[in-house]
Image 1: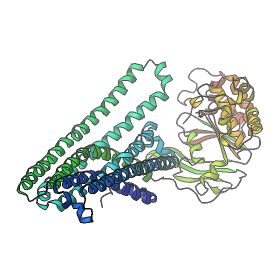
Image 2: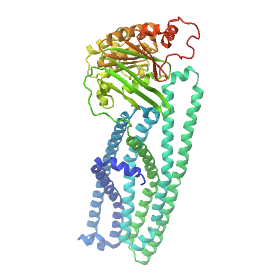
Image 3: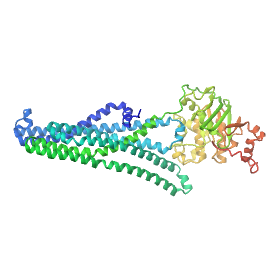
Image 4: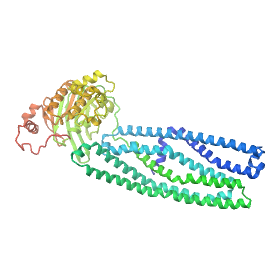
Length: 600
């Protein structure tokens, strides 16, 4: 069974707006009917001049010629007034509908994307998703804004003119409509040819947006490695590819209007010549002939603009497919159905096995406990699986085998909201939003008072440096907190986690990229906030975890050593060797092959 067309998918999506869609369409039809009426009125005026008291208005009891012109003038006034009214109504209707659908699509797509698995974002660029949420949604809005009305009015014009033709002269009408089936066939053929081309255009636009967003986010790195020329060349190549793909689409779309014009010309010549001959023979009234000629000319403009309308339609349908494909993407991770109460926070990893890709196991039968109120640390070399333990606890991914439980509840059965609401995460990669310091601390609890925000900052040893900023807590931190140092961003992140007052605190390389003084301050604050919480620490600097209740050494996805700091140093294994490296008590090469500790 073939997939439904993008138009069908869009109509299904916009089902709640069917009444507004119908009303706007009716206004468009009435506006075009009134737009065609002046040609008929001109024919009526000629009929009065030629036939006098025997004109068509005499059929309605208006005999006097001057009175007929007065009636005709009144009808003209009414027609023009109604045309203006319906034009206003269809403009308001379509534009408001376009804005509403645009808004709802963007919000629905963003909400859906926000609820997808973390793995979904690892496989896609931010710029590509931005292209869907902005460019594609805006492309659809442009079609609904003007293109839908143009399409309806073109159909109305063809239908209306055809009816008038058959009423006035069936013979001329039959000859004049001969090109119409060919024009319709050509239009259908055109839309089928344009569809894949505009799909390629939208895909390339997403690729270009992805590169631009990536480069702007990494502008410091580009400058540091003097890669400006190289990156300009990459952007130039992507932009040129976008230009070439558009060129292929433009070449085809531009050929449509000339072809349509030739078909219309054939119909116009038939009307002019055959109708003229019949008027000379006396078998067609001069007024009727005038109406036919004028209406044929009036049909010329909307049909010649049909190519532009169909071009806009195809672009919007390509965008519609991309938007609705995102909305149709299903999360691979199902939300649990059991709310997790405020936990005591006994955490247990039981035989946890996990692989990001088949055949590349990251964690292999990992088992350990974190008793409520205790601090447990995990260390290991780069790629050993430390950070994966955090992702699985937060359900950014699910275990392949085994289970992770909190107070005996499998995290897969708990609702994501209550699970993640019980955990405060402080990661190595601190993300601050563009806004004030206070806004970023309060992100974990938007309803927090100023006093609570300040108390959390003091607990994180961030209050003093915050007060030294130009605006204190109202200082704008810049995008991603770029106006602050790494240590300052980290302390704000800790304050954010403290303000949430979580039962479980997770520290993922929280001090790996700060100076010694900042590390000491962070250690003091973390020791304070972890006293009454269950704490999981992923560590690079072993000095930050020497006071942990238990330390596990992870290598190649397995726990190879466990104990307190003193026990592990006395064991004289991997941990002890790493400790001596970090304290400068080892000779070069002592731990060759064991790897430096880093993130994973």
